[in-house]
Length: 443
Image (cartoon, rainbow, N blue to C red):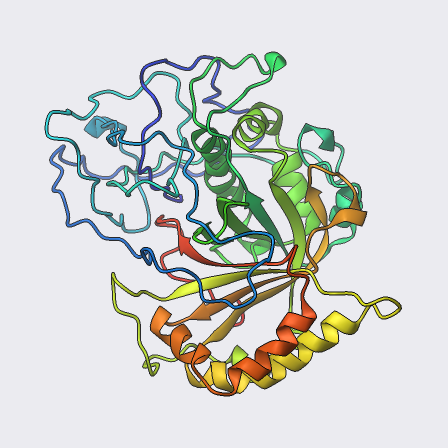
């Protein structure tokens, strides 16, 4: 089983109704789990920690010209104390991995924590918020079994995944691929009338229910021999320097057919997808099917991360982080490859300087097709590449920019990318127990 952090509660002022808790299953013969000793109700508060750089703007020189970096806008109401519903000892489920505890959020002096969970909340409900401090994580209930029902994509993709070529991609993709989700949340979840769901959720709370289903009821039930590796959820983080998106989620699947069998053809898909539709700002969110690439990637940037970089991270003030670069290449008239060639030259010239400071390529992705888009046309894919770049610390980045060779080298990057569409942002990992460190998909 996998664990999700829950740094904010679901509203208890209105008990939601018609929220699914038991999903159909075609696999009733799972091995029974061994019970573990009952835990004590005593909760020991820990010192609050944060690994997010505060009030330090990104120094990436080529952030989109049309989008001024701003703080991530919160979809949550302000000045609202965090309430963590408690569970009785009998409700704890056995887990195979150690339970990591994150420091609780400070509560207002006169506010008492909620003593009972709202009724009919899905067992894999909301996870971490991009704007609220994390709280102590409860144990995750046993995952719900989701068995494959089809070998071909037969589900109505218009339920959510509306990419024109997404169905063909799933049929043809025999190898692993990465689903990259660029998400913008609504302030308040908006359900359709025919969803028959009466629930008072914020946008992020509603989508966390879908995310929890993917982690606990889909990924955990893919047979191990079909898993590329155990930690299929590679990265989930908030954008620090963009108001265009709130979060990025990168999930690896063994093949297109596995995604169809365990997601689209799941008996639970039609019941759970309304929570995603209700929670996302569908006019801004984008989801792409991508593959990991090493094309034009300098070898020095694929080396393992330095254990002692020149400017090491200092926790919690200056931790390591990932830059996310959403790249749309410039195209000169009559020369579609001009932007890519300029970017290749930039990468070759900047790689030795970056590598000497401990900067590494954590993952370069080629976009294959749209999985979801508000425009629903492959002619309007916003980006050509998505890159993850590991940086040991902000001090490292500052020293990189201070190098005397950098201004001239960076002219190639400015020539390579479209400043109106491209975006670079520092990201902060959403605290969960599923991924405990920044990923490097090449090492």
